[in-house]
Length: 221
Image (cartoon, rainbow, N blue to C red):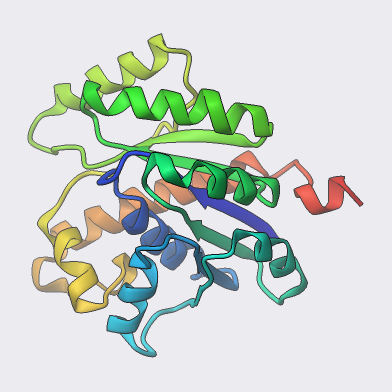
């Protein structure tokens, strides 16, 4: 089993959208669980809207100490949605103790990088858990936005995904409709296909990172 935590202490970075859509892509070939430890319960609310239609399971448990028990369950990958605030630092630190990998979604705005860097330096790096920053909400009409954001991250020495997630209106409506990216209606098939491709590329990078590495549970065994 791999436990993948989605984290950023800045709200609005797209953590829950990242959790739910990556989970749907990975669930095409694996048994997937989403664990919502965020007191706002955004993933759990999304799942409630979906009913029985999600291709993965969701648990709502705001006690991060219970994450270590998830390895006893019959899943291949667990994605963890964490609090998006500075007050959630202790929760995040506890979550990372049980995690194999951390994804840090961020908007491309320079103002979003300060809390991102703080999260990485003060919480992620001390945990010694592998991580990658995921550039999120990229305006597909402004190619320079992505290039500038990549340069800023590279200049700060932060590890990032080569892939990025573009911002489409279809993503904004998905939680209300209880849909994930693999279920987007093909009314606008071109946009739906592009949205799925973004997350598939990220999922491919993610699995390549741990292809030759043992999970934290096995290393500690």
